[in-house]
Image 1 (cartoon, one colour):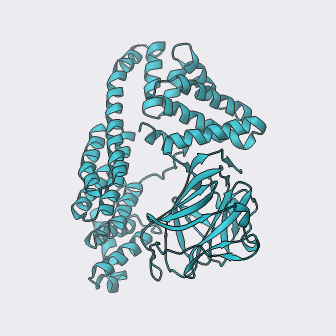
Image 2 (tube, rainbow, N blue to C red):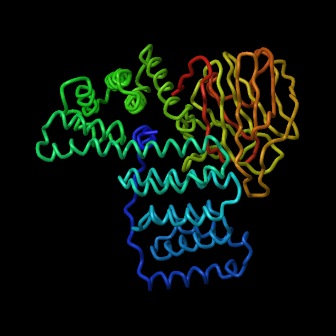
Length: 495
C-alpha cells in the first residue's frame, strides 16, 4: 500500500534520532575488543550455540550503556557475530539495527548483508515469514531515501521466502509492496516534468499541484508536499493545504481541517483516497480530546473508519499511556512492547469502549504456565473478565458470585524459567449471542448465553465499567499487539 510510509510518518509520528557517531578507528576497535573479551573471558570460553546466543544478548544490552564509542561498536559487532553463529537472527538483526542508529554506516547495506545470511539459514515457515517482514521494512527504508533500486532488490529477495512461508497473508504483503514500489517509480516519472517546470518557474501553479499531489498522496511526505499544493491551482486542494499549513491549535478548527481532507478523500481517485483519509485522521487525532457532542462522535467514527481502512484494525496499543492507564502496579510500554508490573492482580485499562460485536487480537509471549492471564471484556452494558489458562482451567465470574469453568483446551506456548516462549496469537470474538477465544488457531473457550449472567469481580475493577482491560496474576507478559476489528456497532475512545 502507498500508505505504509505515510502511516509511520504522519499518523504515528516520526521518532527523533540522535546524531550518529563516526566509526571508531581500527586501533580503538582493537583495544576495545581486547577489553570486552577480557571482561567476558569466562563467557567466551563456552562454545555451545546456547552459550553464544546468551553472550550475544548480554553484549547487545551492554552496548546501550557504553559511553565509549569504540566499546559500544565492539559490543554490537560481537553481538552480531555471536548471534549469527548461534543462528539467533532476532538478536543479530537487532544488533545490526542498533549499529545503524548509533554509527555512520550504510544501514541498508549492512541490513541487506545480514538478511542474506539469515535467508540462507531459513528452514521453517515461521522463520521465512520473519525474514520477509524484515525485508519489507528494509524496502520501506529504501523508499524513504528514494533508493528505488534497493527497495526493488529487497522485495525480490523476499519473494522466494514468502513462498517458503506457505502463508497467503505474507505473500500478499510482498505483492502489495512490489506494487507500491512500482507506483512510486511511475509517480516519479510522471512528476519529472513538474519538477523540471518548477526549476524554471517555482510559481507555476499547475506544476506545483502535480508535484504536491505526488509528494503527499504517493510518498506521504506532507511537510514537503503541502507548500506545493498551497501554491497550486485554485480549488479544494489548495484550500485544504493552506488551512493545514496554518496549524490551528483550537480543537474545532483542527477538526475542520480534518473535515476538508475527509471531503476531498471522497472525491479523490482510488489511489489517492487512502492518503487523503489518513491526513484527515491526523487532524481528528489532534482534535479529539477537545471536542464534545456530535463533533466528537463524528471524529471518532471517522477515525475508526480510516484506521480500519489503513491497517485493517484499530491499534489499541497506540492508545495506551501506562502513566494514566495502569490500575494496579505500573505497566511499561517501551519500543512497542507492553509489560506488566508483577502483582497478583496487576491490570491496565485500555482507554477504549468496544462496539457491540468485535474481534480482539492479542499477540504476546509469556513464561510459566501456572497463573492466568486476565482479559477484561465488554459486551453491551456488561463488563466481565476471562481468566485464561490459569490453574489448569479457564474461569469466568458469574453475576451470582459463582465461578464458571468452560471446557478447557491448553493451547498457549509457554517459556520456562526466565525465558519467554514463542509468540501467541489470541483472538477473542465477541458476538451478541456469546463469545469464543481462539489461541494459536485452536478454539480454547466458548460461551453462549445472556451476558447479564457474567460480571467483573470487585478485585478486578478498573475506573471505567465500559473499558476493555488486560490483567495478569503475577505472570510475566510481553504484549506486542492489541488490535480490535469492528464487526457491528460503533466503538469510541475513552480519552
